Amino acid sequence: MILFFSLTLMFSILILINKHPLSLGAILLAQTIIISLMVGMMNLNYWYSYILFIIMIGAMLILFIYMTSIASNEMFSMNYLYFLLFIIPSMTMIIYMFMDKFLSYMNLTNFEINNYYLFTNFSFSMNKFINFPNNIIMIMTIIFLLISLLITVKITKIFKGPLRKIN
Image (cartoon, rainbow, N blue to C red; front, side, top):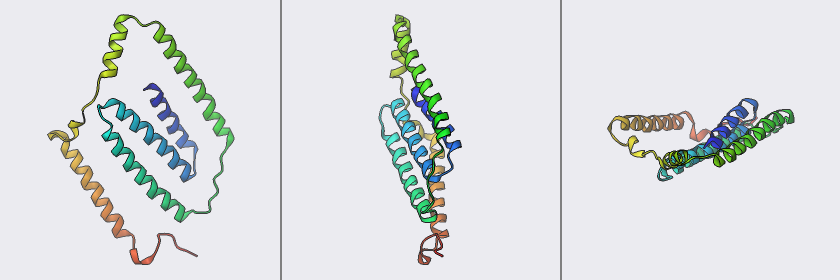
């Protein structure tokens, strides 16, 4: 779990460095995969993480189509200095995490082993989103998504062609 949190943090830092929309989309896709895995590990089932992943993939496809229609010939360049500044701390952090895990497994007592198993078997219930106090949030989210869909359809002029003007 710590590895997933650190990867999410590294990808968040990498978003600040990148400027190209397709690389930002790839980073967002990687973060979605990591967050879906974390949510799936915290729950008894993976349904919520599947739905989250499918929604984000659909949004990324729309973003990809939009960016290729607007800036189709933009070159993708990568600065290797930023890449090295990203790789070196991430490798040292991964090595430190694995060494820390290895050393902590060697020094576990019975009390720590019992607490470890209690923590790993703990799961969160997704019924909280459907029950009374929190179902209002879910209904408001559904209404917001419906209104944003209707506004997007209303803004685009279907009979005028694509969103991009061809010169």
